Structure formats: structure tokens, C-alpha cells
Image (spheres, chains in turn red, orange, green, yellow):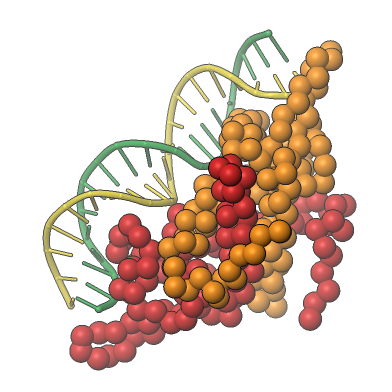
Length: 118
Length: 118
DNA sequence: CCGTATCCAGCAGGATACTG
DNA sequence: CAGTATCCTGCTGGATACGG
């Protein structure tokens, strides 16, 4: 287990965390990547299943985003030579570790909506 | 304090959290918003100060992003009628509550870099 | 079932110069 | 100091149709 300075301790080296933020953003920025990761946090899924759980995503975008995520080591793709073909997507360790980020985002999203409506 | 289902409990209503994710993304998506919020988490700052702590950001982008954040209730802008003019930016309550999201992102960014290098 | 190909609009964001 | 104005490029992402 690595000991890491907390946010309030890195005041002095202010650009350090800006780089880390950019690393994170480069990986999951965009309209669809986080929703995809969110779906895959529940386990392996096939292309059609992911597509079905994310409203309005087109096959073009889903395909493209899955490739990006695979290239960044977030998602693993497995092809089964059955007939017809079966393809499964699952999160790598890196991908699974995005759980905390995603949960923080969801929590904040719900709170923010509460604040701006109720 | 509101009781909220954890990520693993909302499996059944799968689209609920997709909406929350989108709420969050709509607010802080983009190359500069999170870095700006990160800087402001350390306290009130003037335009020039923010600009100085975020490498490579142009005044055009900083101005635009600050306006967006203000419109979304994340940032508060205060003008002092001194000579020359002084303007201070600070986070609202909503903005401050992004602390957890940001810290999760930073933590993940550092870990991800470790994994892909060391 | 699991995608690709093609086309296209809109916007994010950079460069540069200028203003109250 | 705190921004605006203008111009421009490339990416993001939607629509639609087709292929292995």
C-alpha cells in the first residue's frame, strides 16, 4: 500500500496533481466512456448487452469507445469462435479501480441535482 | 444526511446512475474545468493567479470556463471596484463538494501511471 | 451477432492581437 | 489587471447504410 499525500498536502507542488487529473481525463473523457465503465463494473458483458443498457448510444460510438478503452488498458476483449460470434468485454484491474471515481461522480451528480431542484 | 443506494445496489435501475454520470460530466467535462476547480479548492484566487497555476491555459479559455462554471453554480465571482480592478473567484458549496471526485481522479491518475510505467 | 464505412455538422479549443 | 475579438483547425459524435 502506497502512502500518498492527501489533496491538502500537495499545495506546494501545485502542478503535480494537474498532471494526474489530465491522465485521468485523457482516459475517460467523452460522453460515453464513463457510462460504459459503469455498466462493465457489474461484470462481463456482450456488445449487445452494453448497447442495450446505455440509451441512445450507436454501434459506431460503442465500438469506437471500447477500442479506446482497450488501447488504454481499461477494458479486455475476448472473442469466442462460436457461431454466431460471441464477444465479451470486461474491465481490467485498472478499469475496476475506476470504481471509486465513478461512485464519487454519481454521488455528486445526485446531490447537485437535489441542490438545483429541491 | 441522505441514505443513498451504493453502486452495487442500483444494478436493477441501471439507467438511474447513467443520468447522474451525465449530470456530473456536463458540469466538469473538458480539458480545463477540473484543473481550475482543483486550484480553487485551495481558496479564493484572482484571474491571474489561476492562470499562473495552470500551465498553458490561455486567457480566452480561462475566461470561458470560469463563466461556464459560474453559470452552473460551481464558482462565485466577486468584483472589487479598486484601481486597477480586482476580481476574485471562489467555489460555491456545490463546487467544494467536488473535492471527493477530484481526489478520486487524482488518486486513480497516479496509480494508473504507476501501473503503466513501473 | 458484432461490428465498419461514409458522410457531415457543430463545437472545443489553440493562436494572436487588442481593450477598459 | 482582467479580460474580448477574431480567426481557424481538428476532433467528437450523430445518421445512415452496409459487411463478415
